[in-house]
Image 1: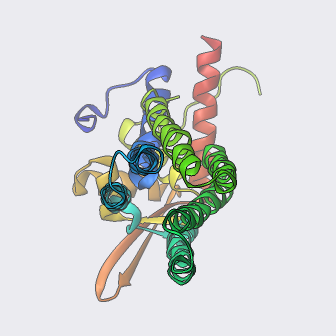
Image 2: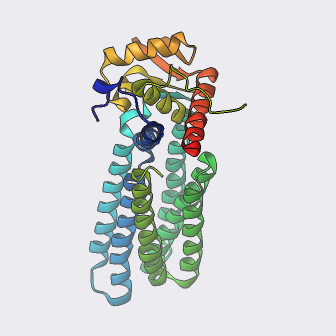
Image 3: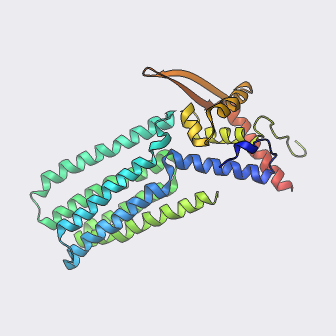
Length: 208
Length: 100
């Protein structure tokens, strides 16, 4: 990216337009919008984590504690990746967008604080598999709603529809039970988030 | 208006075009620190200062010197005029591409 040294070289209109598009894509990505670092890690986490839970529920192939360990370890990795994606310049921006982003980010902790409170209280009253479903459904409710809200805040349709898609799967899974819920979250949610992240990143790179 | 528009000479330089495109992407009512902008653009501080000076002269960017805690901080933002100039510039470029 050593464009500065030949700054005075006149560019064709095509090159200028390309320069603008590249710079806009880079800026969006560096401001925390890199889909490969936001959607995809969560997609992989749900695919593998809920996939492990499904194998436990459906076939007893893995122990419950191993499946949960896979899910939680990947969740921690995904959180770290998301924070990493937003590290570079998010603290360097102030104004409306920065305020909005900060309040939105904090909202996630409100949602999960409620999830933990509800689930800790009710888990004791439920059989093990139902308690697992309670944790999964309430957590994914927060994710689905906040994804959709995020889409609404920044007017990003993909994000809004990802939230709607998660909500639909979550409702279906809650009705069908823990095994189906785990399968839907693994393949439906995990698979789609992984693919959307990769496709969006490829489009950004293409400058489209 | 007839014929192709003239390209704004202030923005018609790669480095300044990149500066303006970046600031425009931040959105209205947002400012970025000088080091943050420098990192996004991969420019040296000296180089960026020179280009920002020219853009400020044209009234396209606003440079705000303030303090974050005790640290002096410089924020940069696109002015309404700068945003307009960038929009006109991209429109002119597209027009040229359509004509050719």
